[in-house]
Every structure is written in structure tokens, then in C-alpha cells.
Amino acid sequence: MSGTTAVAPRGKLREALDYLLWFYTPFKRMSASDIYELVSTNAYSGQGLYLNLGYWKTARTIDEACVAMAMLVAETAGIGPDTDVVDVGFGFGDQDMLWVERLNARHITGLNITPSQVKLARERVATRGLSDRITLLEASATRMPLPDASCDRVVGVECAFHFDTREDFFREAFRVLRPGGRLVLADVIRAHPDPRPFRRRVQDFNWRFFEQKYAVPSANADTRESYAAKLTATGFAGARVDSIRHEVYPGLHHHMATDPAMLKRFHPLARLPYKLTLRFDADAVYSAYDYVLAVAEKPR
Image (tube, rainbow, N blue to C red; front, side, top):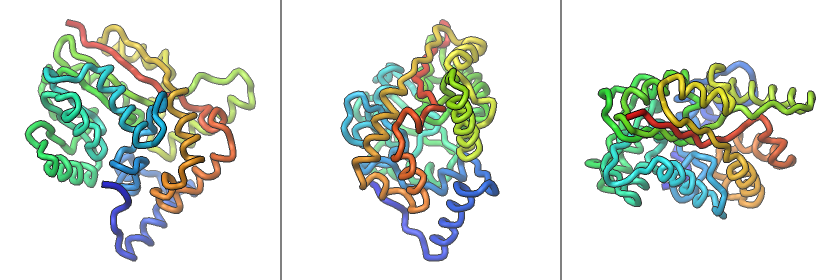
């Protein structure tokens, strides 16, 4: 399933107004759930409803890159036939269906706070005949409705920067993991400050814009070092926070510039900022952001 949801004429006007107020004025702050309700099924990918930026190490299309990111997280986590998985921020369920069908995950419990995503994801899972293997809940990653020590893996694909706070989520992940369980996240964090004053001011401005427009709590402005320190303080062992930004942002930027169909999937008012960024190189556009693969284990 791809494309956009049908919207009644009056709904289209409201949708356009919401985009205009949210992205182009300082007057409308939105929660993460509100943002994803507005974005709806205007997904990055064409063949599914993935919303991640993609892992571009070998991918040549956005669909390949989105699947590659989901598989990178799953393979790093060691998802397989003997694993019970909690997937936080599951979007429209694409990655959960992928992990059951390709990796034969024993069971996946998904948590998501956006009602329309949960509803459509449940329908898609049922259509694929996977409802006995995938349970999707409308629930918060910082208040998981799950028992202690009830899963083997907690994973998240590009969502933890929204959590209020990321540190609260770490505590919940630690609680629901069984001893020896693993946490794996693909996540967006702050880049290290540029030593050049002007570039550093640009980084600061862009990060503040990111916080304000994309519902990112200020407490989540982590660097790789503070991210790892928070995992360790929670009780996790062997925390690694590895940058994969060079396999994410340049590939995405190039693809946006060379595949007109990708931007056409966005609402017209959402296309303009992306088109403006294409006048600059990826290093300049994404200078404020790192993109990391974070891994840690609950001690046995």
C-alpha cells in the first residue's frame, strides 16, 4: 500500500492549514502523535509505508534503503525464531511484518501512540495473516503495558528522539527485557559541535528547529557519549553508540534530488522545505544531526 489517504475537500483545506501553521509559522507546536496523524500515509517509500530515512550502504532506491534500515536493526538485535520482540514506534507495521516473514521472529509486540497508524497497521497485519504473531498496542514506550522481564529484544527504528524522555524509555526497556536481552535503536541525535563558530551557530539553529517542529524534548539532545552514559546509568552493559550518518544522509539527499516520485508522495506544502535543501550539499543540510545505531544488553 502506498500513496495518500483520500481526504474530503474540507479536510484538504484543514490539512493544508495545519501544514502551513506547523511548518511555516512559530504558532503551532505539535505532539509526535499529531505530526504523524498529519503526515498520514504520505510515506517516504513507494512500495510500503516506511517512514525511516533509509540505510544507503548498498541500497539504490528508497524502498531498498528503508528495508535495509529495518534489517540492520533486526540483525544487530539478533531477531530470530527464539525471540520475543518489543518494537517501539512501529509506524504502519512494515518492519514487524518483514521480521516475522523474513526472520521468523517468534512474536512481536508493537507499541505506538498514533491511533491512525495503529488502526491501519492492525488491518495490514490481519490481511497478511500475521495477527497471531504480531500484537499491536496503542501505548507509550515510556509507560509500557507489559510485565517485567517479558521479552528478549526491545528495538526501535527512528523514533526514540520523540520519547519524553529517551532516558525514561531506557528504564522501561531495561524493565521489560529478560536478563541477557538486548536493546537496539536506530536514532537521531545531535552532531558533535563544529569547531568553527559560524558552523556551530548553524548547527545550534537547526537543532532548535528540529526540537520545536518535530516534538523532540530538549532532554534528548544527546551526543554519542551522553547517550552511552545514560544507557550505562540505567543498568545496561556493553553500550555502543555507533554513528552511521554517512550511510544515511548522503544517500537520502542524493535520492531526493534524483527521484522526483519520492517528493510527489508528500503533501505539496511539505515538499518545499525538502526542495530548498537540495540547493545545498548533504553535509551542510544535516550538519546538526548524527544518526546512530545504539546497542546495549541487560546483564545476566
